[in-house]
Image (cartoon, rainbow over all chains, first blue to last red; front, side, top):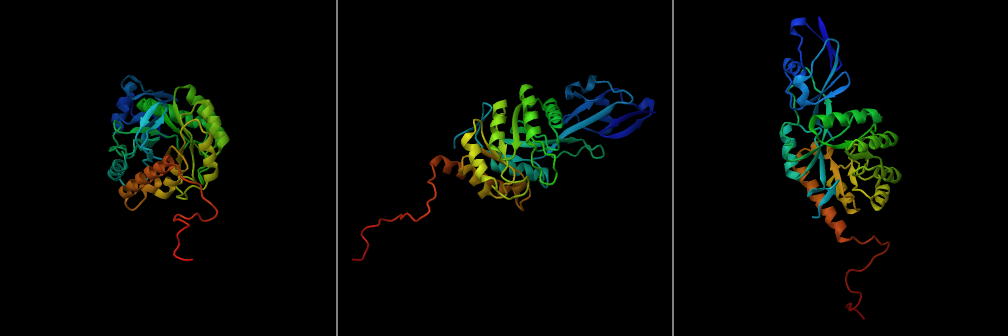
Length: 70
Length: 256
């Protein structure tokens, strides 16, 4: 099994189901890409970079979006 | 009404509105439209992986409003800087409402961490609007490092207590070289009017509008109050006197 820590939770993937890029991961999780920015191992990844950002076993990923706030 | 200018950008509305706590995205959109707000604050949070389609901001048009990301939730300068960078990466918006609130009970801003974060963010090219306690010296220090405004609180966030800090706000307004946006604690339109009457450049309101029984009507009431307060300030109000001053002539009475 391969694993990613996504927003504080460990998620495991069968090797053949492990998403290869951030955009593939978002698709797998059912997350629309337009409102999201990411951090991969502490590095900020802009939405336009999702398709070319590789995802690897053991990484820590934060998926962040805007929501209502004062 | 005269225009509000922040960081060289002009705004017709002097009412900034927060987008938290609304019952639904539609109610929020209606309230924002009704009050003519041009700057609306938003927060950054983790995507809820269990409910990824949840999008409270779907009806907020980023073309129509200047989205002002806040750093709510940050307890240190470091966390606020991280959130600011993420917000900019998400949208290319360089504006940030800087807030550092280590104490969740009163949500009072940490002056030391706020100043530290402001210095870094200004150097990185952000337009920084810092949320602060009503501290005139801190306000000056922030303006000196290049913040676009200062945003002193009237009373704790969401408390609806009004201008508990009025005396200090008046000093900040008198001395500030940048626009003063009174943020937090304004529970009624009269509180917003009072802030504008004493010379605040703008106010930021969220809870009082979002949690009213009719947010749309309350948004309009705040809009009118902000306009009334601004006009009154520009009209030059007279100072209170400690005795009566007759409005009618003191001669020609019908008596000998």
